[in-house]
Length: 283
Image (cartoon, rainbow, N blue to C red):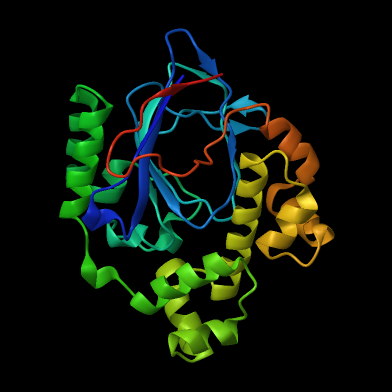
């Protein structure tokens, strides 16, 4: 399998973490992961076989070739797949509404197609990506499209700044302290936060804590669960186990054992800003 990633152009970097993708070798079957709730959003275009969700272990109908995922409460289990090939855009927390004329609460736990997100322009984008020569051209098309739809008026700078603070603190920052650092009252911050995301600041902070802890455990198999939980902002390991069970439906130990035997979408740091990384083959 070939993997690749790319830093966005400077104008998009405040809102987009990276562009990235996978491409299977001919005849290769890939054990795709179960996607857990998180704080960001991901835009996918499949020039190969699209994702097939799996419900109770049974593959369902495939997703549209171009779609957005904004998982906040749902777990999306993906069936193993041959012929995979996709390029994705990873949005930072709260940033997807800069580009999509819909609220994050309307996008939550759905997989809207390009057509639903942008109408006829979304269908044109899908067709142009289908006809593109390679992943470099597709990454360029996606960035040009998003640059043309960047909406400064959609921003709430206080909420965006609050999200950055809450994510860095990993759930340790209390809401009164967060509101004070932003120069807002707590109720005003909660009202503005819900208007943008459909979540409260406290809900976002708990989700960020969960995301950071799971990411650490998936990227570093040497770290103990108790250490990752404490560093992530949990009171103790039992607190993490309860939170994980409520969100995923199984104990973290059992989930991690299965997840580490499959591929995952937790990307490491970019190797070269602004350029496609040298492809790596593994698995």
